[in-house]
Length: 233
Ligand SMILES: [Zn+2]
Image (cartoon, rainbow, N blue to C red; front, side, top):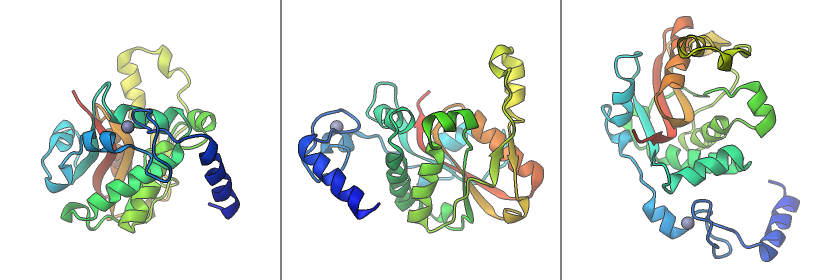
């Protein structure tokens, strides 16, 4: 960030108090963006400690992969939900980087994620990216990359052209389309590598699964997954 911008933000902070991103209460100046109450109430997982966990269970048998970890459990109405909302719909892209850094510090302590070669964010649809101005998964990937000291790229795992009629089709067709929307550019970069495919929230895992399939259709690679949060069933 430029000095000028830092100064401007510092000045703005004098007049507009900062609010907790999770609960919206005022924060004391110069503190973190999530208040202490919310921090202590965020539900962290222990996924990085076990190859078998709730995350890997959900994907088990669908695709070959190695390790999988979410940072938080996402509960409807819980403290994590407003964070994801701020990241996706309120333009708070820096929050994605910060959560990535936080998760990266956790993952770099895990032997399962010790030999990751590439961090690949799930590509956002171009129309959504235009609307939002950024890919929230790429922001998260950037933070992970900084903390884990592993490169990330949003140009390896890519999206094929938009399936315009997707929403008009029936459920079965829609699932068929999901499997074909991702592709790998520059496959030679990830051949025989350990790639970490990352997204904001893991729900059914369909997106991660189809990204993994796109990778494995092109090259042999070891695949692991990380997300900011895993939705509770
Ligand atoms: Zn709070």
